Length: 247
Image 1 (cartoon, one colour):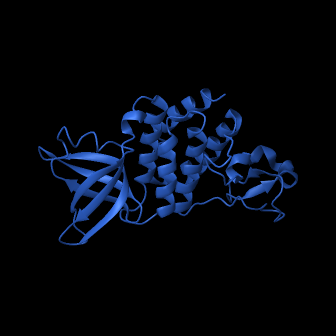
Image 2: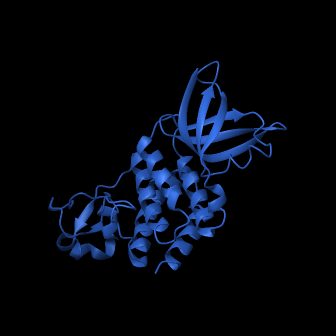
Image 3: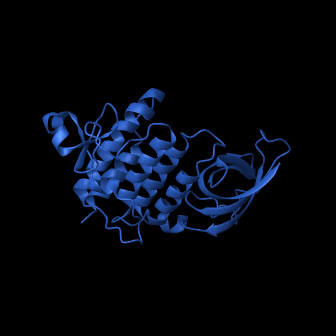
């Protein structure tokens, strides 16, 4: 068995005296692990840092085996990310979310979202909003996506400013007014499909904070609590830094 794919490093575990088990989020093969011989060497360690983009070839005798990786660098961003506390907490949180995915289950859209996120994690003007979008993407890939396209009550798609905590569907200003104290806020940037570099303007601190409140509610309800997991500490620190450093 053999394939070659692009992947982002999301974790490394020691194996024996000189090797490591490398975990990648790959474009076509999902979250996938493999053994890297000599992965603890001085030459290899800088390459196998979380966030780095690698070209990896996986080989195994059987499809279900651990297999081995041969890797080469595509984009070495870890050294840059290490200079930012925001980026370090962000990569820790994002990789912990990816580990919730079933192994070897392809999620190409989520891989692309992670690639964009990693490219901007050290930018405090952009990273927090991208992380909110990334959390929404993880919820969707795990089967708990929010429906933000139209009002759950009227079916219209204008003035959508709330989300129902029960259904995960958007609610318009008029339909939600009598229940506003029981609804979650829907910040405008979560309905904006543009990305950095295409005219996208980062949202303000209040919108970002409301975005994290929204995603945090559904992550807790559908992901963390059912698994007996607390919300990651890295997330809390990322949110604190991300909202505090925005203009």
